[in-house]
Amino acid sequence: MNDLSITGLILAGGRGARMGGVDKGLQNFNGTPLTLHTLMRLQMQDAVTVSEMMIIANRNLSAYESFGVQVWPDSTDNFAGPLAGFLTGLERCETDLLLTVPCDSPLFPLNLTQRLLDTLIAEDAEIAVAAAKEEDGSVRAQPVFCLMRVSLLESLVKFMQSGGRKIDAWTAQHTTVLVPFDTDDVDPRAFFNANTLDELHRLEQSK
Image (cartoon, rainbow, N blue to C red):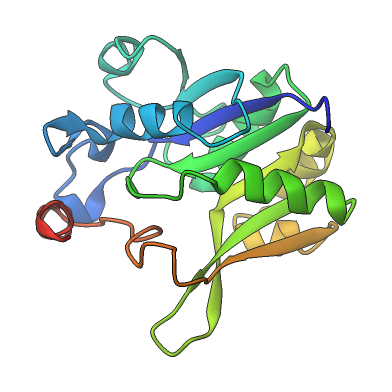
């Protein structure tokens, strides 16, 4: 067993450009706003408790605050991408580890936290990143599904101050392990992210 505590961070600070500029995190999925659905799924994680929750949002903050957890805008210029959300999360995090998930993949695995944590500890890594099975059988990293140690804050500050914006370019500087979710029991939709309203509606209707 381990005594590492985890804060869950939901990334909902994007422009929603491919959704016509709407606030993606507030769009409904099966009658529930995507971000609230994601929050509840984090609370339902198997075996491992996500002790604290935060949301990164850059508009409609009061709507997000109604979900009952802390809400923070990016501490850098608005809409600077997922790494800006990582940075704000690390700045505000009061636990040992930070788990990041996007607001637009509402079916992510219920054992996500446990699998990432187990691998992080077993490999004595600094970062664990989920990887999803592709149609050709390969696995591809899903870098916004990321468990990281809060000690990486200084590294990320330096990386972003130097102009870095790509998650994989930053994680490559650290001991990072990929955690494949490629077994037959994993829902093939688990890491699907809905970038358009049409994709969101099709995901609702899929089984």
